[in-house]
Length: 359
Image 1: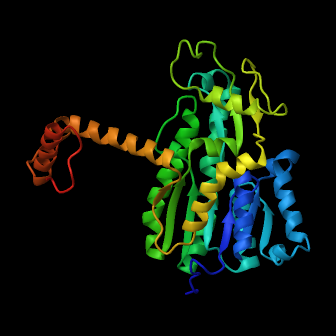
Image 2 (image 1 turned 180 degrees about the vertical axis):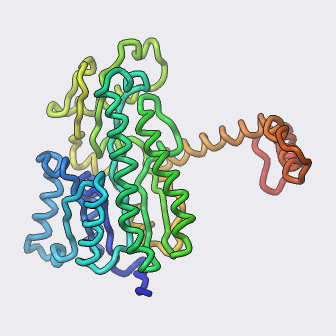
Image 3 (image 1 turned 90 degrees about the horizontal axis):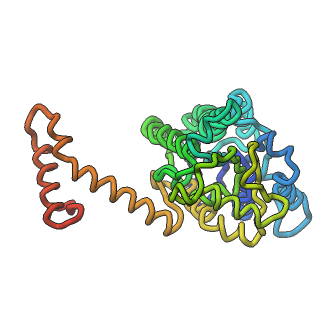
């Protein structure tokens, strides 16, 4: 059995996507801490000059003679890898193991946001393909990396799989149904995975920052809008409008909201704004990654935590409201059935969810 890397000792991180502003800032912090980093570079992004510019700056830092960057170039390995191709994921994992001997933390952090209502994404073969592309990017690519890494993690008898998701894994968003669906699929996969790998001392944690953090640090793809989804006819908050307003702050990324073609943009925010946007998430990842007893889920930020609490409260209240319909299908009387009815009665008396003690 290999020795276990403690939380404060140098760890080897494997990032499934390393060109986002969040990933670059995380890598810089990991290298400062003395960790080793395997940085996977999606070909379709590394060939995009604007998208890869910040990562290339980081590479130049690693090669520099700056005293505070000493040793960085020996502790980072960049690998061109398309996560949608299983053989490339396997080759990347093998290269990581050859370079650094182990993988302590697999960070699944590939994402993009497809913006469009269900009807908007059903208008043509091109928009229907966006649905498949969303699942290839968010779900299947990360599943490939996880499957490729599992033999190494099992053999080590230690490891930590971190999934950078969003509170979209708890809460649906109008205008982003496919992003939400792909996120829920990956989170469900990881929930099941956690039980399977626990006997091998491999942990799984889902980290959920706010949806805007993921959207504004990754590629945004807009389907053509339908005319009847305007603010006058649909009172739901418009994700399309919110993201369009952010993109229009920069002339290089500005879009025409009435465009009839599929549009793709990488947001270009001021560095100071990006720093503030991702700081909490970077801190959470470095604090949780490799922890001996990590949480199964961690929600980043007060706003996200409150939104999820409200959603869970609503789910609990609805379960209590319809408890009779639930227990009516049970053939046999049981203690659990009686407890369910008593919980509903206590909720009716107090006007809220009953306490765990029942008092």
